[in-house]
Every structure is written in C-alpha cells, then in structure tokens.
Image 1 (tube, rainbow, N blue to C red):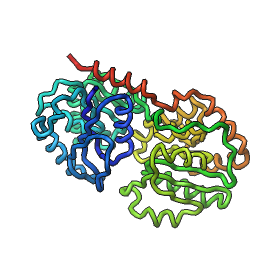
Image 2: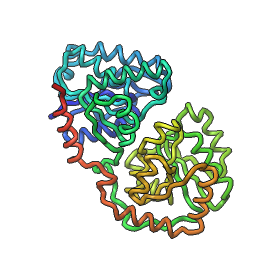
Image 3: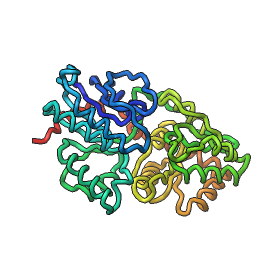
Image 4: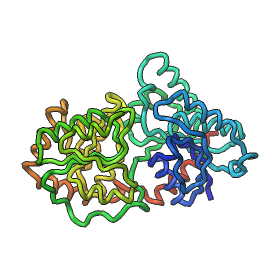
Length: 376
C-alpha cells in the first residue's frame, strides 16, 4: 500500500479533505501533516498536528515550518516508511522539503498549486524574493500539479520555465462521493434562483448579486451556500440583512448536500474578482464541475479561464465588462426566456461524466505517475 505524507495548509479545509479522501479511495494510506484553523475537526486519516494558524497570518506560518523540520521517524515511526510526499500550497511545500531533508527521505515530492497568491505577482522586492523561493522549491520537487491550464501557461511557464514537470488535475467531483445525476433537465423556478456556492470570498460578486436582487425584486432569489471569508466579509450577517432577496443557507457537507443545493438552483454564479487580473482570471472553480454534473448552468465572466470552460462545454452564459451593466441584461434575458435554462441543462446532461468526475482509476493513475516522477 502506498503511504503518502500529505502536507495540507489546513486540516479543516474541505478541499484538503477531499484530496486525502481521493487518495484513500484509490487504496493509499494517508498521513496528514497539517496545521489547522479554528478547532481541529476529526479526520478519517492519521493526522500529525503542526499547530493552529489563522487566515492571512503569514508570519505565523513559520511555526509549522519549524515543526516540520523537527518531525522524525523516532517520534513517529510511521514516517520512516513514506513512499510519497504531497504538499498543497507553497508554505506547505517548504514544510515538506524541511521534513524530507531532516529525515533523509529519497521519495518523490509533489507540489500542488490551487491558487497563485497575489504576493507572488508583481515586480516588487517581496514578490521577487517569494518567486525565487518558489522557484528553488519547485526545482527540488518532482512534479508540479495545477488545477487550471491557465496557471501553467500564464504563470509557471513565464516565471519558472524548465524547472518542473507539470500535471493538470482539475477540481472535479470524486466519483465515489457523487450522487446520481438528475434524470431530466431543469424546469426553472419562479422566482429565478441564482446560487453562489463554495468559498464566498469576493466582495464584488456579493455586491453584484445584491444589485440583481434590488433591481429585479421578487422576480429573483439569490441563494448563498458556503464559507464567507472573514477577511472579505468581517460583518457578513449585517451584509446579508442589507441585501434584498438574498438568503444565506450556511455551510454545507460537501458531496452529501450538493445534490439538494443544486436541485434548488436555476443557475450558479461562477465569477470571481478576489484577485482580479491574475488568479481570478486563471482559475477553474469547483462550482462549474458541481453545477455541470447536477445540470445547473453557470454565469461566468468572458475573458477568464472559467468563461472559456463554460463556452467550450456549453455549460452556461458569459457576460462582458462592465458586469454592473451586462449581468442585469443577462438576468433579464433568463427571466424572459426560461426555456434557455432548460436547453443549457439538457446540454450539460448530455456531456460525459468524465468532464465532471474524477474516478478511482483516475486517482490510481495519478498516484502511479507521481511515484514514477522522481528526478534523477
């Protein structure tokens, strides 16, 4: 059985648990070496704590690095028989290399990048220093995994050419966790239900949806599901109270709740300006795969990788700049032509499951690639 030491940035993060779950479903043993934000939740895999961290506390992330360097197979015997080291995010990659060096482990080290942080963009001294550190760590790693092809073409190929072996791993649903797909296309509700699902971290998205609620009144319902980022929404409850036709349904339990959430929506909001101009343009969010699988068309900005995915798969509609003008026009079109939602929903159901799902066989092939990726 392949034993993976998984360095994740937050034990409580659903995406971290999802990746660990995929490895376990593929027959691997996972040892999580992770900090946690807030009270640590029980995990299905063995977990070694790197302490508690906080959102946006970058100085505090030095503590997990020091703890990683101190870990040894004397104190944790299971760490002496690791076959693969998997690190999610740049700070965890530094922890992984510190751990491997301390224990003289000659196993593949894999770097998974889900976002290109704004601190890595630009030509200031801090950005240049961080990119030098990133480049050195990538060069010492055996594979770079990214969730969007635009991360590779727009960032890694430009900033770190020749330093990595790249591998695309999209944020698809895990087939083992997914519920059956709908057996028929959507028949839109009245009022029209627009959902924003997942990591709620974009103030502009919130304001645009609130504007839609105010503009169209009782012809629309805005439904929010997920985790509001406290750094973006420090007074989220007050924001919700002040937003017309907007309801927050709280956090949800991953794959278990997704069928119900998407069944109750007509379209899903797939725009993001949290890191406008770079990461937000390049990323592919979970909600396009979730929505597509559950036959819910997406609304996405033109000119983004998300918009390109939506157009390529006929998975919804794209709107141009400025969204403050074009989004209301699009909503009006959907209100006037609800049959358009049904046609898009039919198109989504006609696409193969492989567009939306990562199977156990997919994950097993991925693990085999990583095990064979050790640099000479």
